[in-house]
Amino acid sequence: MLEIRWHSRAGQGAVTGAKGLADVVSTTGKQVQAFAFYGSAKRGAAMTAYNRVDDQPIMNHEKFMRPDFVFVIDPALVYTTDVTINDKENTVYIITTHLSTEELVASQPKLAGKNVYTVDCIKIAQETIGRAIPNTPMLGAFMKISKMYDIEFFKENMKRILGKLPQKIIDANMLAIQRAYDEVK
Amino acid sequence: MAFDKMELRDIEVWDGNFAAAQALRQCQIDVVAAYPITPSTPIVEGYAKFLADGYVEGEFVMVESEHAAMSGCIGAAAAGGRVATATSSQGFALMVETLYQASGMRLPIVLNVVNRALAAPLNVNGDHSDMYLGRDSGWIQLDAYNPQEAYDLNFIAFKVAEDHDVRLPCMVHQDGFMTSHTAQGVKTLTDDQGYGFVGEFQPMNDMLDLDHPVTHGVQTEEDWHFEHKARQHRDLMLNVTPKIQAAFDAFEKLSGRKYNMVEKYEMEDADVAVVCMGTSVETAREVALEMRKEGIKAGVVGIRVYRPFPFMEIADALKNVKAIGALDRSSPNGAAGMLFNELAGALFNTDTKALLSGYVYGLGGRDLTKAHLRDLYKELQSNVDAGKVTTQLQQFIGVRGPKLAFL
Image 1: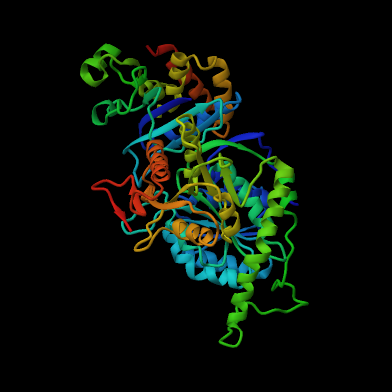
Image 2: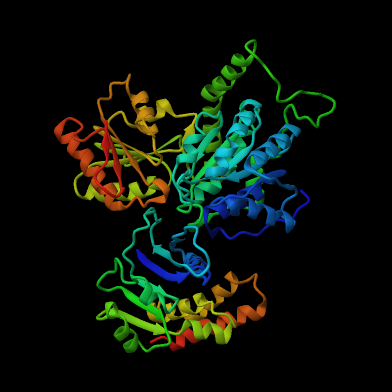
């Protein structure tokens, strides 16, 4: 079982990202689950979304999770929420920030000694898609770090999932995914 | 059929809401009268979009409340159409008066209920309070544990409800957010398979059949009211179960997916069993397998058909266990839990001497964790070892503060 927790703000696309990832993974014959914590939260409120991936049917519906990966797609959430809660010794963090990994860890001591990668998904999204929607670039970074799928295979599938959007937006998302793949470290 | 068909992949990643909306499209609903409410909104929204995009030949009626939504459904069903809608929580509560009208008038409406807590305090998350509120309303109630089942049970609901020996409305329940907003792989039927399973709508006593005028929604006082209600109950008790079984069998033939009135998991040799509904059934299944590795013979019984209550089937499922935990996701507000009471009633005149205890959990969407269930199974095993219930009969799990237990 592979488990992922997303830290996001409502409106940044974590739910869409989690469902998109689940869709891609499902095409390879694996079992998937994608869900989020909802309340009557408004745009901008901190929220979490989740993925589970397994070879067997996923029967576990508990919301509690000890994640293998933590994605943070809004830079401020590293300071205003505990992104390390319920983590494991080998949990991998991919965090959106304009800081280097060293600067980030220095600014948030809770991340010291943890397996942290950084990428500026906000900047990438702004420069490619034209809006600060950091969900698809995060998935590009995840493909690099996890080596889950070949990036071209992943992009082809994401094109299908984004199929209803205008071609210009789809192309921009592909650029964003590739840039995050190349830039994460 | 003058509408466009939709190409679906064999497995789509859908949440429970979208799965239900797709089922409504494939069943080609004539009329949806709806007043959207969280977390069920995307079901009727989905139908409306399919309609606008030309994938359904039907009508979406926008109304001013859930009471009006069900009233619109009743009118359309009496006129002679295939009718469905969806609601949750407060919307369901507002519908209650009309739910009894729908069942009493024997109208085969399908209502998707995305289970959610009832205020106060206001809460949009999933528990079974609204589902329990509907249990005396004369409807058939089916319960889904995941998005696949929310999809499948919609087809089964139409098949059963519209049968001329049944002619009763049917609710399809799924857990708010835990199923409705959780995306999982859903094995699809093609449009032809789905529509072929439910078939062309066969009207009965339809008001638009002007050659055979009928009256719906009549008044009967002491002279006939009891006979009508008794007839309705009789049909629920005698006619519905075989029709559900037949629909389950036909659906298995079509899809390979098997449903039962009462779902039994690891029950062949179980000493301790948890009985529950919704997503909790699946989480408990996973925990039961883990408990078995630790030497506790754990099993799970899930209620698939909540009304008519599978009285005999549940007694049979539990006949060999030594301890039972009845898990209610709704506040009984001054009584033992619903499942505790139903199980006690089903088992009392049998030879079963199982120790029965009740648990209230998960109100307002509070997480039911695997850790809770592990503790629960261990407690049931300690009841078996002691030969008696070692706790009070009703306990609350997952609530903050001092431990709550009663009875």
